[in-house]
Length: 323
Image (cartoon, rainbow, N blue to C red; front, side, top):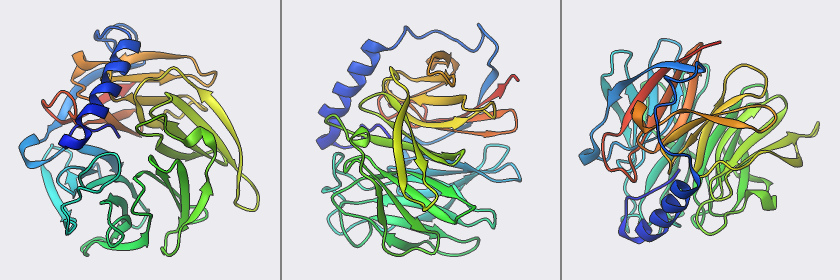
């Protein structure tokens, strides 16, 4: 997550964006050069004036894509033909969300879909009555199932279907929380120093793979792997990659630990190899506008762009992964 949506956050975001841009390679259409990704196209355009800034996404078997519209406080479904349908709008906090840590506005962030079609997602408001993990069952109404600290910023969300455990990154408190899918009191699963911010936002994107929890740190430009011990506790933290400015969410390609990472500030997608090396495979020339999250369905790669800094054309991009 990387924001420019409230006056209170403008200075911090601009500084981070400037630093990321300075570190990033010059923008050029990378997808046409090499073959990791090809046929990039915009699958859906969103309306910035309505707060349709897509922060995270989850895929459904039938071809639909579920997204969180951060500024609009909404959950939406995007059909295969690009039609957007709003499924739920979260209640606005009584104070307007001005006390939301680091940002100063309420926002929906991470989202996952369970096999039965239930959506779990995060809402950050800076208030104890609304901040936390929410659930939306098919045809139902959104309901908070687990409260999270109001002085934190829940951001990334992952589901381990084997243990029916949800994991949440907190970008302000530098914590990974865990709780069962039934909800209840969260557990501070990891507070490792590698998760902490360096002044703005720390732990961000989140995935489960190979008996471990993987997370990114936006401020530090890193990808972290934390083993899940046999008793469920967090094991040792390993830094798997660094030098990824403005890294947000990511997705594994299906080739071991190879992954695709959204670099929000630079407006790029990086292909990160298991040894930590990386190359840029999508850029602003392909249609990216501050990309926030990535998901894969077979060889189809979906990338959401929230246009937090560019303030132009928030969208859902689709590309082909060449195997």
